[in-house]
Length: 236
Image (cartoon, rainbow, N blue to C red):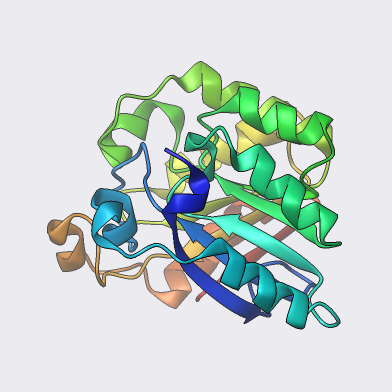
C-alpha cells in the first residue's frame, strides 16, 4: 500500500511539533504497535475507515504557506511501514522544506536509507519503555535488536531526540534504566518526557488509569535529566 493513499491527517501549521520551527504535520495511517495508551486509535487500528487526504491539495497548501513554514513533520501511525516514504520525503525536500520523521524505530533499514540520501533533517524516536517490558506495553512482538540498531543509526546521524510518554505502567526505575542505557552508548543528545492522557486510548482499560501528577512527573524528570545534553517536559 502506498503512503500517499494512507495520509489520514494534516495540520497546516504548528508551533509545538518541532522545537524552534514552524511546521506542517502529515499523519499516516497504520502502525505495527498496539500501545495501550495510544490516542490515535482511528488511524492505528482501522485506518481504512478514515478518509485519506489528497496529497495534491496538501502540496498546494504547503506551497501557499511556504514563506513561513520551515519544515514538514511526517508522523503517524508509523511512517516507516511504507517503502514509498522515501518518495514522499523527496517531494517535500524538493519543495524546499526540512523534513522531520517521527518513528517507533522498528525499521532501521529505511531510517538509514533516508539519512544516507539526505531526505530527512531530524528524527524523533519514541522509546516506549525499557526493552524487557516492550511486549507488555505495546501488545506486539518486538525485535529489540532492530530498535537498538535504529538508536545507533539515529545517534550517529546527530539530529535527533528520544521521547517517552509517561504511561503509569512505566516506573521511575524503568525510566532510569532507559536513561542509563542511552547515556552509556552516547545517544544522550536530547530526551523528552511527555505526559500521558487517559482519553481516547487504544486500550479502554488505560482510560481508567490515573496519570502521574505534575509533581510526580517533575520528580521523574529530575531523576534523569542530567543524563542528557538537552532534556525537557511536554504536555505537563
